[in-house]
Image 1 (cartoon, rainbow, N blue to C red):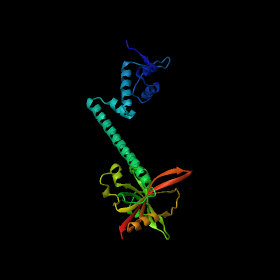
Image 2 (spheres, one colour):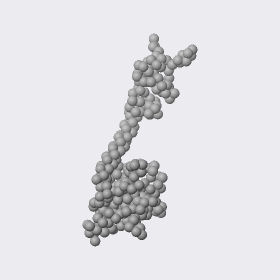
Image 3 (tube, rainbow, N blue to C red):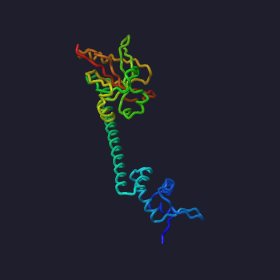
Image 4 (cartoon, rainbow, N blue to C red):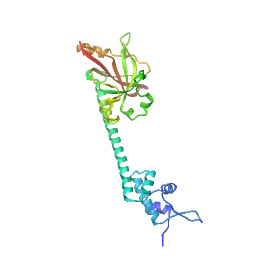
Length: 267
């Protein structure tokens, strides 16, 4: 004699919700008996065993469509191939999370460096970087900015202003770029990025970190860098780079933090 269990008895027995069992039924994963008199669902042992298997898959993070494929397999090899696909998906997710952790670790170390160098000049190399977007050079076939926002490298890169001298001591942004530093490129770019992306090499620079109010038109004051260069017997070699790093709200004012790299050469 078969024993019939109600949906709530099955849910209590297996430690899952009745809603979950109803979902499995809607998705065609289980087919309970129906009492035509009262409309109640009843489950026999074979259906309970099937729900147990589905529940195990769900605890392993297997999606409903993937469970359907596994339950529809009629051979050991078919199920084994399904497991192999799931293993590969999870390994890809592990690699994605490992890259995220590396990025967060880079950001943490970077913030410590920024704090140490705020308003202080030192000699440091401009980090080699790939240019994914350049505001005014469409003829060079850089990726459109909207594509950059939706690309995987976006969370690994920086916006960067190229600065040129103005009529006075202030400098002005002549263009805007989105760049990925070479060390971050290893985490987010396809193999051999040198073959398809413009790249700037590392060069010696005077380096500092500045904080300025978040405004559209910035007059960049690089006088401290030039004073430091003069003291060191150095001169400016080319346009400066201002890498946007992050923003902080201070006293109701949004302050943007930038790393400034001023390429140098000996006098």
